[in-house]
Every structure is written in C-alpha cells, then in structure tokens.
Length: 108
Image (tube, rainbow, N blue to C red; front, side, top):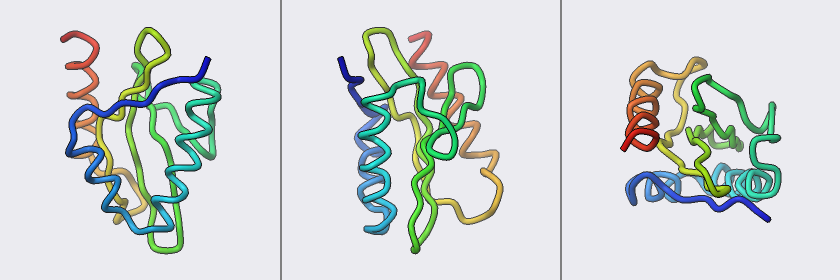
C-alpha cells in the first residue's frame, strides 16, 4: 500500500506549484519515491531533522526546493512547509515554522 500525500494548508501546495519547472519536476519525482518508500526514503532525496520532521530535497538548474513533511498514522504524509532555498543553510525561520506546524498536526 502506497503512502498518501496531503498538505498542511492549500498555501503550501500553491508554494510548491509556483516553483521553477525543473525543481517542480524533481519534486514530483521525489513525491513518487516518497509514496512508494515512505520512511525508508533517505539522502540524497530526503533528510530527517528529528522529532518526526523530515525534508524532501528537490533540485534543478533554476534552484533548490525544500518541503518539510511528517508521517501520520495510516500511511499518510503531510507536507508542512515548502520554500526555495536562497542560501546554503536552511533558514531558522523556515525550520521554526515547520516545527510549529508539526506540533499542530501531532497534537491537534
């Protein structure tokens, strides 16, 4: 049974859909891998940040995308936050927002 991907809010999906075409295409490829492999997906495609927070790592010639997600009971994946990286390190503000949304999803 494959994992099902959902979004924390419609704005998260809209952000991903606004990405450059090549990054969006890689995101679609990685989403397929995520649906098939679930928590077994690892670097270079996915990276764990601890406490159940994981990032999907799409890239293309026009940029590098990041989509933070978590797993829920019933083979569900929730994409919590997404953005295009502008620097080498993940900005603290993006990480904090993803962690805040993770807590909301886990604890209601």
